[in-house]
Each structure stands twice: as C-alpha cells, then as structure tokens.
Amino acid sequence: MKVALCQRRSVLNDVDANLSVMMKDIDTTDADMYVYPELFLTGYGFDRDSVEPGLCDALMTIEEISKKKNVAVVVGAPEFEYDRIYNRAYVFTPDGTLGYRKIHLPGFGSFAEDRVFTPGKEAVSFEFGGHRFGLSICYDIFFPEILKICSYTHGTDVNICISASPVASQPFFERVLPARALENTSYLLFVNNIGTIGEFEFFGGTRALAPDGDLIRMSFEECVKTVEISSEVVDNVRKGRPVLKDTMFESTYRG
Image 1 (cartoon, helix red, strand yellow):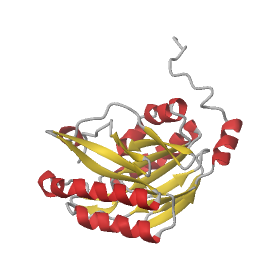
Image 2: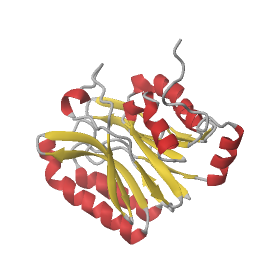
Image 3: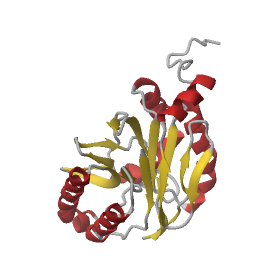
Image 4: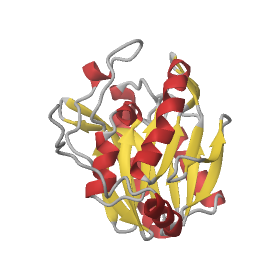
C-alpha cells in the first residue's frame, strides 16, 4: 500500500485553512493513507476559543472524505472533553474513527504541554489495507515501551509518530528514530511540523524508515512524499533479526 507523508505548514488557529490543505492533498496525491503532523488542524500553541467552534465540523468532513474516497487519514488535533484537553492523533478509515491520546507530555524548555493537556493512558493501534499501525506523538518516541507494546502485543508492522519537534530537538530525534524502527522490526513513519508556527520553529525532517532502521525517504521542505509499505519486507527482516520474538517484558534479570 502507499502512504503519503504530508509535511505541510500549519496555520495557527485557522482550522478551515488547514483543512483546505488536507482536502487538496487528498484530491491530488495518489495514496491509500495520508498522515499529517501533531496538532496540524489547529496549529501548535492554539487558542481554544478560536479553534473549538470549527473543529468538530472539520473532523466530520475528514470522516466523510475517508469513506467517500476509501482512504485512511491520520491527523493531529486537540480533543476537548469538558475542562480537559487531550493531544490526539485522530484516525479516519472507511470502517470508522478512532484516536490516540498522547501519553508523555513535555514540560521542559519552551514546552508546557503538561500544564495544558491531560495525558493519555494506553497504546492504540488500528488495521487498514492489510497492515496494522501503531500510534505515537512526538515526545512519546523517547519511551520505547509504547511502540514495543504496539509491535509485540498488538502485532503492528508499521508504527507512526506525528510530531511537533522544534529545531533544538532535531539531534535527539535523529538518534532515536532508527532505533524505534529496528528494535520493533517495523516500518516507522515520522511526520513533523515545519517552519515557524507562533513562537515555535519546527525542523521538518519527515521520513520513512524501513524495519531494519534504514532510511527510505526524508525531506526538510514543505512537501507530500509517498512511500510503499510491504509486508514481505517486514517478514524478511523479522526472520533475520527476531527481536520481537525474543522480547521479554517482565525481565528475568535480577542482578
């Protein structure tokens, strides 16, 4: 199957403008799935009063497009639940809608997510097009247990990380992303915000990594890049390096 990695610049507090970009991409790019960055629909650092009125309609529109065109869409946006706000990866498929709530919320440097959002509690995966996909958001990628649960317990062969990673964090993401692919022998699709949004400057660097950690595709420019996902590739890598089969969650090592 073909996945479109949509590294688009988000317009802060303008849900309609960001939705228009998504609709154009889906109309003009041949793919089975479209993946957008963390909080793309509202922009990172959104104002709740500005985005909440139009967000529900936008999500319903994406749901309709998914069913009409028989495609899947993954996009970041806030989820408002009374006085709580979750940083969510929304997933739309022709069979239904689900989502993942970001578990690890940074509260260091210029980030204050732990004061804005409520953390999620569980790993989430979904099936589409003969593959199973695991979900993570940005800072989650530094906690390997999330995608390990997805790959080992849920049986994912493709893991997705949507992100709002700034320029200062680029070296750390560069180091950890190949490890998340190899240790799970699963594809890793990383889709980051790009450019300046409000007070933040994001480095882009959207990429697809093979199950052995090798780089398939990457870009530091605003773009839509497509990548082919193959179950055969996953099977071959797992035969040669059976790290999932040899995984032990409850360690027998006592020292």
